[in-house]
Length: 225
Image 1 (tube, one colour):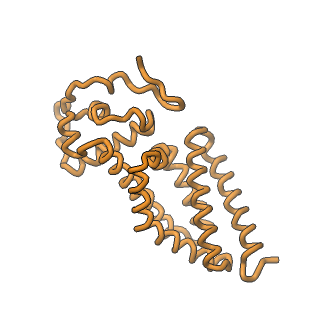
Image 2: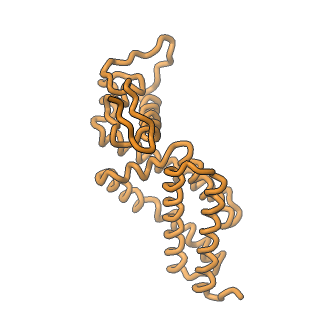
Image 3: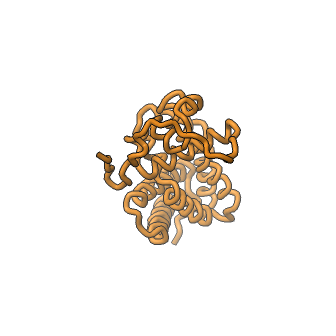
C-alpha cells in the first residue's frame, strides 16, 4: 500500500524498490563534488514532496538514479545525509542574506527584500530547515552554526536598527531577533497553507512594520511625536 503523508504527496512506489539504477547512456559523469551536490538536491526535493519521515538511503538512491553503494560512499548513514542537507540549506540562505544586505539601501529595503526572499525560498524548496530541526541531533548542528555565524548577521541588523530608529542597542537586538523568528514562523505557515505569496508578504511586512513602530514609540531614545 502506498503511504500517504498528510499535506504531502504519497510516497512513490518506485522508491521502495531496491533495484540498482544505471546511469543513462550518454549522461555526463559527474565529478565527486558535483555528484554530492546532486544527491543533496535530490534529498531536498524528496523532503519537499514527501517529508522527512519516509526518507531512507535506499529511497533516495532510487530517486537519484544511483546505486546504493555509491550513495553510502558519499554519506555513511541517513543522519549524515540530513546534516549535510541542513548545512547546505543554511549556507544558501546566509549567502542570499549577505547579498541582500549589500543591495539594500535602507533598513526598510532590507526587511522588504529579506522577507520576500524567505517566502520565495520556501515556496521553491519547502520549509526544509524547519523539517530537519525536528530531529534533535540535527537541531544541535543548527545551534552550533548559529553560534558561529548568525550572531554576526544579527549584530549587523541591530546596528542598522539603532541608527535608523534611535533604539538602545539592547532593545534593538531583542526586536531584531523576535522579528527574525516571526519571519521564520510566517514561512512555516505559508508552507502549510500554500497561499498567495504576495498576500503573505504583505501581511508579514504589515506586522513587521507595526512591531517596529510600536517599539520605536516606547523605547526610542528620542520618541517620535
